[in-house]
Image 1 (cartoon, rainbow, N blue to C red):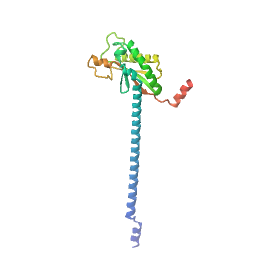
Image 2: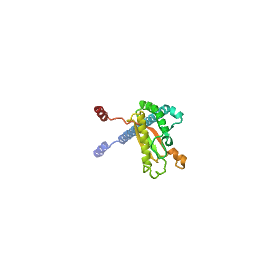
Image 3: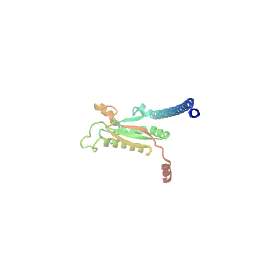
Image 4: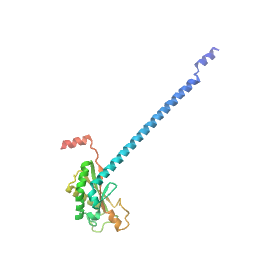
Length: 218
């Protein structure tokens, strides 16, 4: 009898085991709840950041469009998805990289709006050259459309700098026959694809080390 009584005293009551299990379950549920709340807060923050980014991009687009009101009204350029488009036929003769007089006038009309925009926004201007899909004529100084589009972009970039844009806020890019505005199916569509576009690019923030180095070199 003494042995049985000792065994009964040593056994753990069932309610105590159940209590421990419930405590563990509650702890797990609390951890899951905290994790879910954390994920929701992170998603909410990401959505807010994305919303703010889109709003900022839309404001920049509106500001650029307002700055270009005069050349847009005169039909000198187009403006679509934040990109300024200039017809290659206005800027250059076919397969040429030399600016025509009409092309110079268009660029002159863009200088003041672009200067105003750059003053108000810490961004760069990317000057992109595009061609149609036809190969170069034999005897042309360029082997392919890449070379022609690159030189046209450089020509426009250098002209804009000569006209007054800061040279550290403008750069050239070449796309050749790639990324056409419309499918190359006839002479009219190919004329649309021979173009130069000006688009804005965010200016990367300088690291403290870079800023100090530039300040020291000055």
